[in-house]
Length: 217
Figure 1 (cartoon, rainbow, N blue to C red):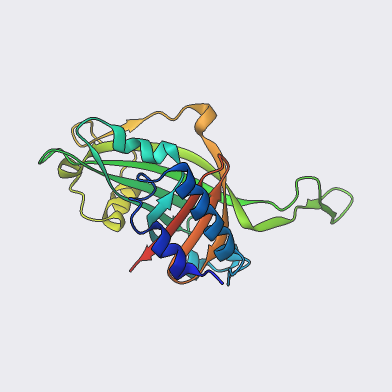
Figure 2: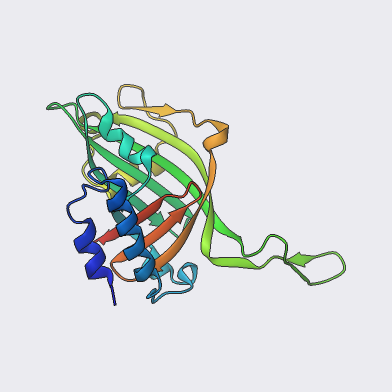
């Protein structure tokens, strides 16, 4: 039976998914589905101690993320999805390698909340109040802030250190970072956590994208 070691081996030389063919992606998707069947945490939203942390991307099919590598004179560095259950926030951080002193950082901040388990299902608590059943695997996500800047200008050292800056700075001085508007049609989405243990997380997004991440410690 295929396990997460087989998955790690399959994606090891894909450069996060950049260096894959359609056949590669199909084969990897099949392995991911097998690993998802072994998920030891069927209710990941009830396990914040596992969910919390800075997760580094190992593989994705998201063309939006992989497209960063096609920016002229730039190469995609590490990508992180940092989950903070205590504040119901997700920080997506992409390091962009470039010419010396021109290395960049792209970050998107989102709030999340459990999605309805079934939008058509509800239980009647009283004549005037309903209680909605919430999913233990899927979260609705609302993106509310995007920032681009040079790592040098922002004093970037690590995702954790940078998140502290984001939390304490409502809007950066344009000499440090640029707060970008997020189009209304791209502000909302969802993410389903299909595998979670102490060092691996697999997710599926509303655009059909797959994500495999490992927790940095």
